[in-house]
Structure formats: structure tokens, C-alpha cells
Amino acid sequence: MNIKHVKYYSFLICSVFLLLVLSFIYYATYNGYIDSKIEEEHEEVRHIFNSVVNDKKELINILNNKELKGIEQQLNLIRYVSDNKDVSSISVIFKSHYLYSTFGNRRHTSEERVKEGFNIKLVSSLTHKPIISYTIQVDSETHLKVYFKPINFKFIDGVGRGYLTIFDGIELGEKNQLIKNTLKNKENEHYFTLDDAEFYVEIHNSTAIKSFILDKYGYLILSLVIYLIACYLLGSYFKKTWVKSLIRRNVIKPYLQPIVNEEGDITGAEVLARWVTKKGEVLPPNLFISYIEKNKLTTYLTTSLMAQIYKELLNRDTKGLKLSFNLTEDCLFDPDVYKASLLLVSKCKLLLEFTESAPFFHSSVKERMELFSNKGILFALDDYGTGYSAPHYLTDYHFDYLKIDRCFVEEMENNSKSLYIVESLVLLASKLKFKLIVEGVETVNQKTALLNSGINEFQGFLFYKPMPMKLFFELYTK
Image (cartoon, rainbow, N blue to C red; front, side, top):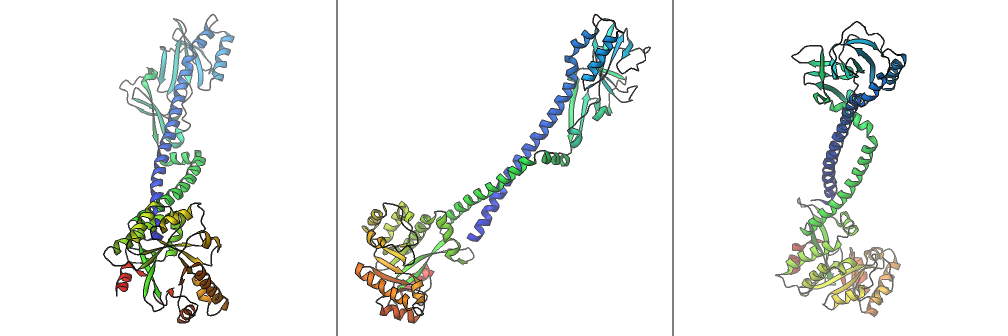
């Protein structure tokens, strides 16, 4: 696996996973939204019917102790109709004949069979459509017949079709449109109870989804923002976990750049990290080291490289070979790094390098370094002269080696000041009893100048480039 692809794969996997989660949430929310709207519509329809049932006593009181044809009585009924948005009119029926209606055009001579309760008339004489009414018995001879306005489905009519079924044989849609009548008894009027009426809905999902989006667009935008943030956070975590697992599986291999003496003989090597893909592509450290350091995975990488080197050294005689590893302050306090260091120091001269660009923060660094030193482990200050260059690094901490950075070597041939700095570092190392290794030697002239300055250990492309572990040990054995 290539680290360049880890980022994309991790974010792709997390995006797909979170998209499935988000889709499930959207699906559940959408269904809940539709169900709640349908339930509201259903409750509204039942409320229409129940409102009149609940007003039964009020309507009876309007007629009690008054003349049936009294003006006050008629005005009270008209007032009731105007106040109730779901009632179209009320008729007074006396001895099975219409006495009058708030609608005003009932035929007084027409005979009406009346029975208390809900009634559906399949063909109204006025609208020629079904009409639902509720009959109230006032006394043995008098009834009130309350006519309901056509049923409207405010939400459902916009996203599908709703209909009321009575006896499972009559289906009434929007505005009491008769959808189906399959009753064997074809008489025009049918009495029913609310238990005989059920509410059904057919949803057109495409239209309903549009309504859901328009109604919940704020929620959807917020959830999308949360989704993107979650993708980033989970993707970052997944990438870190993935890289950690690849490190533990030794996908990052140790490459060794030999350190040679003045005769060109190999005296040691610096262990470097190279990411090797399944196709054999070797990725340079600038593509992954910064990520590993930023995400505090350096301890895992150092332990992995040490373990791979130790496994290679098990059957070799390398007691005099100096192997150096780049270390961070966190590595110094990591128990796994300490254990791996103890194994390695039994097979070679182990040199742990700290760079000046990463200052120490922990107050116990000195004591921790002494713990390693007591086990025969050496320390080097890497890239000296390019970082903080604080004198206390040399006085307060125990180092065995100074490694002169390549930037001074590169300028030696063109800038005499760089040569003077190298010479001063040689003098400083001599006074403090430090050994010197120079990095970045690429030309014979550089080597000659360094030899003349008193340096006798070199590292650079003039001698060797970083190479795979097995190739290095074959070369060292020869």
C-alpha cells in the first residue's frame, strides 16, 4: 500500500461508510416525517367528526325549550355553522320531514328517514357527490342533521393520494370524490360508526421527497456539514490507524547508508526509513516521515525498524558495526523502544541520534539518556549547527558523537567560511572528547578538505547511497 493512496482510500472508505449511515438516518427521518404528516392528517379528519359529536349537547340545547321555527333558534344554528369551519349546514327534521336548513333551500315536503349517528349519502341532491352527515336525536320527533364540508387532505393531496374507506366498500378521496363503491347494498344512504371508517394513504415518493427537502432543508444542510466534518475526522483517524498497522507489518523498511573511514572501509551505517510498496516502488521519506512525526507514530516506526534490523543481525557477527537510528524525545521514554535498543546493543554498537531542530521539553531527558548510556548505548547530536545550537546541548546532555550537517560541506568549495566552521567544530569536538561524522560528502575535494581538517568518518553519495538491508550486509560481509 502506497501512503499516497492511503489518504484517498481512508477518506473513500469513511465517506462511503458515513454515507450509508447518513442515508439510513435520512431514510428513517424521511419515513418519520411522512408518518407524522399522515398521522396529523388522520387526526385532523377524526377531529372533524369528533368535534360535532362533542358538541352534541350544545346543539340539543339550542332546540330545547324553544319554538322549532323560532328566529333565535335559527340564528344560533347559523352562528354555530359559521363558527365551525368543518360544518357546511345543519337541518332540523321534525316528524321525518325537513323543517328548515341553515343552507336555506331544503324542500319542506320531502320525507327523510333519520337515525342517530353518522351517515354517508352517496349522491347528494345538491352536489351530486357523496356527503357525510351526523344525525342527533333531540327528542322522539325532532332530529338535527349536521352536514360536513368535503374532506380536504392538505399535505397528502400534495404528495400522493389519501382516501377514507367506510365498510371497506366505499372509498372517498379529496373533496369527497367517490373513488370506489363495492357495497352489495346499493341504497343511497349508509349509517356507520367511526370504527367503520379507516384512513389510507398512497405516497408518490418523488413528490414526497421534494416536500421533505423543502420542509427540512435547514436540517439537511446541517447534517451534510456534520457529515463532511465527520468524514474528515474519521478519515484522519482511519488513516492514522491504517498507517500504524502498515508500520507494524513492516511495510516501511530499513535502508542503510554506510559510514566509512578514510580508507573507504564501512564502519557503520545510518538506518533510514523507506516505504516499499507491493510493486517494489520505494517512496522517499519526505512523503511519509512528516506525517508520522505529526501524528506521533515515530515510536512505532523506530521500534519496527529496530526489530527488522535485530532479526537480520541474529545470525551475523556484527559486534564492531556501528548502527545509528534517528530518535525523538518521545522515543526516549517509550518502553518498546528501550527494549528494542537493549536487544540491538547486544549485537552491534548502537548509536541513537537526536536532531537539534527538535528541542527537549521533558525535564527527565538527561536521566533517561543516562539509563541508555549505562547499557552501552551511544548518543549523537545530529545536524549540529543548523538547529537551535544552544551550548547547553553539549554541556548538559551526554553525547558521544557530533554529526556535521551537509549544508556546511556543500559550501566548503565556494565559501571559505563554511570550512572555518567545520574546522572550529573539529576543535570543539576534540576539546569535549566527541567523535565526528560528516554527512553529505559528494565530491573528492570535499573529502580531501575534511581529511585535512582532521575528520575521518564520512557519510554521503561519494561513497554509498542508502541501500536495502540485505544488500548492505552482503556488502559489509565482503
